Image (cartoon, rainbow, N blue to C red; front, side):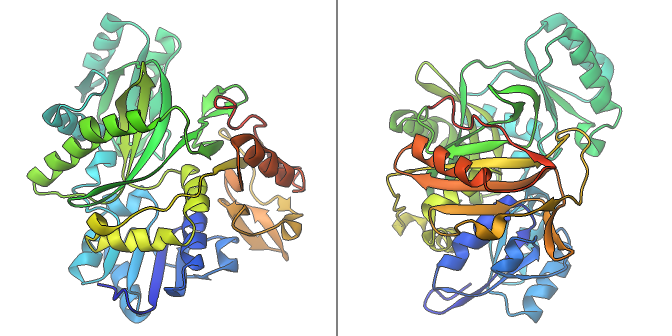
Length: 427
């Protein structure tokens, strides 16, 4: 375990905007001695060493940590967690932030999560679980719409379909069982469609103690007014006004703590951040889904508000000290606007040049987190679908949004686009 009294060498696994935000917050903390990211991106490279490493190979990650005297590993994405990288690190005596492969099933399998929620009596959507197309088709036709169709496994945030017509519903089932999402779609969960407003609740768990660390709302759809196809997220804001203190308490007592108790009872205690997607209606929350890592782009708005204490919180989580840990929130708001490559979430081109970034402020109130970028030709090049996360804090949500869009307008990137209405529900 990392000794809290000395400086810590830290490895962040991942390459997106979430990992840039984590690295940025960690770097603010004087306990951070050496910061390495694997593989990182062009933005992360400005504040940390970047290393070539297969983040899903537990043995390779352990070997790298031993060679580089890494004390603490922060695992950003879900895939290394589901692959057991956290287990490999803990077996080697290296402190890490993130659940075991067994506990990561809360994200890696929709059917597993439903079973846990049933046992914990946690309020969530009614559902049915299928392993073959014929039975699933018959169920959908018998139930009728609206419904939510989910690939059981990890599908990079793209395995959830809310069909508008029966034709779309049946086509989604054929796609999933036909291999469109690989092994993730070999099993399918079909849920009742829950009405209400969705928000994200983030809680640190050290196996026993649950410590809420913030709320956020993201915009999943590509178009303004939340229209068009789903994406990995086009922007986010924190806090989420709809997630009041009373609703957060209800979610903690009826959903999160019972889930965590059931996981411990099954011999798979949870350690890391638990991200609960909640549907809120009439002052009550029901669980939409769990994720076993920070959201992206929700992490960006949370890290801007948490700052340097994020590292202290993650260390306390990994070391089982959350019962004596507090979160100090600034009473303000943060907005992040995602700039994406034209064509996203469909086909898009990589390699377009982005200029104007060097003239923008970089401080605890204004940051551009890089998501899909790489350095080339002496410039920053787009290297993904979601490319930049333009993030700002303000005393009000409106002020934070105004600051974020002022930065967007100073970025010269003809190959990119963004939504101009992030935060509209709350505003």
